[in-house]
Length: 258
Image 1 (cartoon, rainbow, N blue to C red):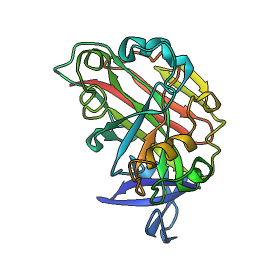
Image 2: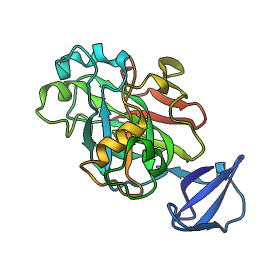
Image 3: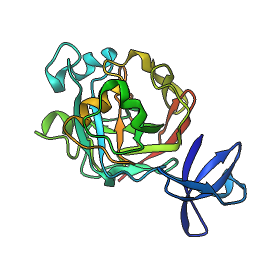
Image 4: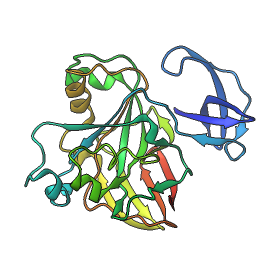
C-alpha cells in the first residue's frame, strides 16, 4: 500500500494512493485508521514529504562502491565494520517537486545522494535483527544532499548534510516492499549517474534498525536514510534530480541558487 501526505484546499492530510488517485484517511497513520475520502486525482493535490519525522538518521558509506569517494572524509580504505550514523535536522526535509536550495554562503561542490529511506512504524528499543523489519512501516525515496567542502572542512556535518532543503523525501511510503532486493537509480537532467541494488548494502535495513535501537529508541515516523552507492553526482542550479527506487516510484526535485 502507498501512503501519501498531501495538501488540498489549504488542508494537509494523509491518504492512500489508488492508481492515479488518492483517498484521504482519518486516524493514526501508524495505528488504526480508515479511508474516508472520495478518490481525487493525484494531479489535483500537492504532494508533501510523506512524513514529518521526529528524528532523521542517515547512514555513512553503506555501499562498498561508495568507499573510494568517501576516503577523503572518513580516512578509511574500506566500508565501516559497524553502521556509522549521523543526524540530519528535521528542518532539512522537503517533499517531491520542492526545490533543493544551494546556500548563498556556499561556493563548493553540491552533490546528490540517492537513497532508500526506511520509515519506522512502531516504537523500537533494543530489537534484534531478526525482528527489526517488523518495526518498519514502509519505505520511500530520499536524497541526502551534501555540501562536500563543508563536509570535509567542518568538524561536524551539521550544515554539510543539514542545511535547509538537504533532505528530500517522497513521493510516498510503500509498505509492500522487500528492502533487500530493489534497484535504485539517481538521474540528473535525465542522465543516470547512480545505479545499484539494495542487496549490495554493507549493513541492511534490519541491521541498521537493530543497531540504532540498541542505544536510541526509535519512534513511529522516525526515518533512516540507508546510504548511497558509487560516485555521487554534482548538482548545479537549474538541474533536476530524480531518485527512482523499484517498487516505490520517483522523487523529483529542481535545484535552485540561494
